[in-house]
Length: 130
Image (cartoon, rainbow, N blue to C red; front, side):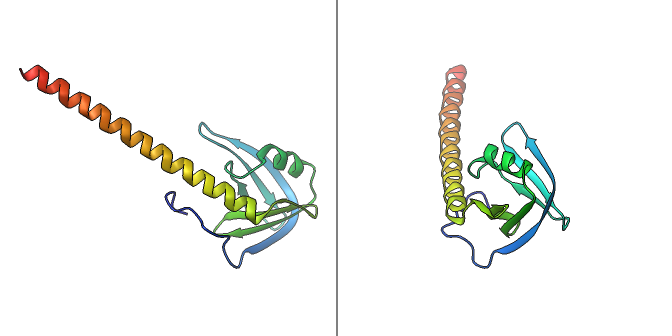
């Protein structure tokens, strides 16, 4: 998904992958946290940090046996752990929309800072030439 496009609805025809849980690990980076997990069918999935309840999902996955993941283009839209839905399509959509709004607001703020600092730079440059 392109960062500037916010999803307006849950994708049609989600692909369901079900299997026994083989591996779970937390992935921490400077900017975000995620959970990677692998099923017995050798498929790996990334529960992105923008999705709700990351810590709860990580803890539930550590105790889980059977997992069903509903994906579209490698993005998780629904997650069932041992028959219990822990991520619904609606909450995944809302999280992606909120994350997109934060991205747009951040880009706007950085643009304003750039304009202000460029103006200050030009002003200082003009004063030095005098």
